[in-house]
Length: 172
Image (cartoon, rainbow, N blue to C red; front, side, top):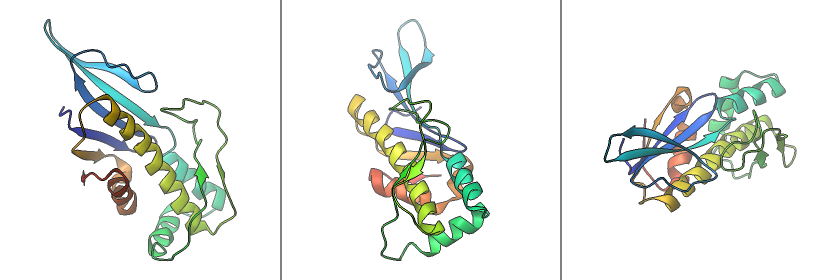
């Protein structure tokens, strides 16, 4: 694994990972595991979890009684509208890294149209990933790119927002 790359898997949950070498990193709000070692060297993996990614979008689809592809299509076609979506507090399946709150109520900050709520849920995923990327940046050398995998990578708007907010190129 290349330590200059953040590896992000976007599925039911989202997982941001980064390799670091040398001394055991002090990262109390992230998961840290050994990814490779020999008698002379250890490589670690930092991991931040976003519990509600695809599951948060499914949660919204169920709440609205509308198929997810329709909600996503409406959200993408309405992106040019100059309206601020509500804030979505994403606790679907619990709030993961770096907060670690198992029982956290998901909610919107205001009433909104379904397309606005879809944008808000997508943005919650992006911001939770970014919080973990920021922690990665503080614990090691600067990141140079993101490699994304998983079922949600087909969602162009989500990948573009991750790239835009992080300031890093994202490759699927």
